[in-house]
Image (tube, rainbow, N blue to C red):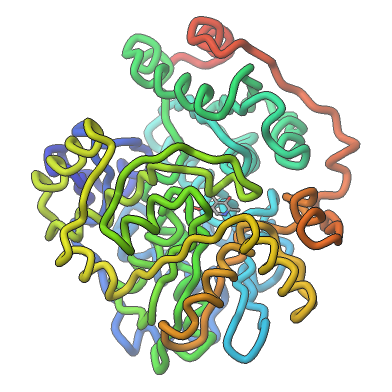
Length: 465
Ligand SMILES: *Cc1c(COP(=O)(O)O)cnc(C)c1O
């Protein structure tokens, strides 16, 4: 399988290279040169398979010969062995039509573990083959950082430096990062907000001397392999609810458009999805884009669902590439215009094409709290604020979509227990696998939001390439 850039002007890569790559050199994002498909019989053949076996079948066309089928199976089995539920991603019924797909049974209680646990093993495998060393640098508002650290701690051939905004992540999120005592993990609390931390990471990538010396790499959702690993659970859930004989719809709490784009790819591969509901909070650029054609940047408002507090969703470019008929030059022109003017208008024909699969809803703080209370009282189920936004959107659009509706439960409620308690009056308890989190020693450096200070700290500890 060859991978091409959405901006059409970068050399194509194979799966191994695309896994280790960040942005394409032309500024675009990599995706497969063509969408592979599974036939109706192949989809029917997924019925009853384990999560790992489903993942092998779904990922094989993307991986190509970068790994043998046996290597891929062993890697996936090892990635999911640490999940606390034997089904890895169990479905839970809420009523006759609505289901939750619980994606939070990994080590850090959020869905990012599903992709990240396998990505850590892919990195280790590919870097070991090439005898190369990477320095992973990231900024996190909480979930990505903890998932990355748990996936990469102790892995050979790489170091991780994770920047979080001092005092602005939940105590559970911070401890999930800072209590991991591994010699290749470094936590940095930046005296500033998330945007300051993100700006520092960008500045390091844009400092050629620094980036080249330490071979910097990223683990955010622009990474193709992460998206590939998220396609799997759409097949796994839909097949259990009757696909390919019946269409199934999904509601996806959305931030960077990575998780819902994986659902879009599943549909492209032949999975009969009714609709994908793109659920946003008040940071609603995606809802405005899909419902009005208005993809323009507003301010970011902090909410109880911080992983959705994003204005520019990087993976939206991958959808645009398809909407522009996979024309890299046209996508590049649109994105350059967007980066300059902070707005892009989706023409009606493109909007109609997107609307065949993607619908959207915007859920404010009251709507989130109401959905959280309703699930608690009617279904005896406590959900986290991100999941509650997905559920509110699912209930709002239920009349417009076909089939059973699966809402992706993207985090365990205990990860956001203060917000859950405020909305529902109930305080969720931390699951067994997180027990001890508050007894373990924390280790992190606190640094000013200054490039020189952060580069000096990393330079003293990172391994030159
Ligand atoms: C990251 C995250 C999201 C958003 O996922 P995207 O792929 O960025 O759209 C939603 N909920 C939770 C809990 C998350 O951690």
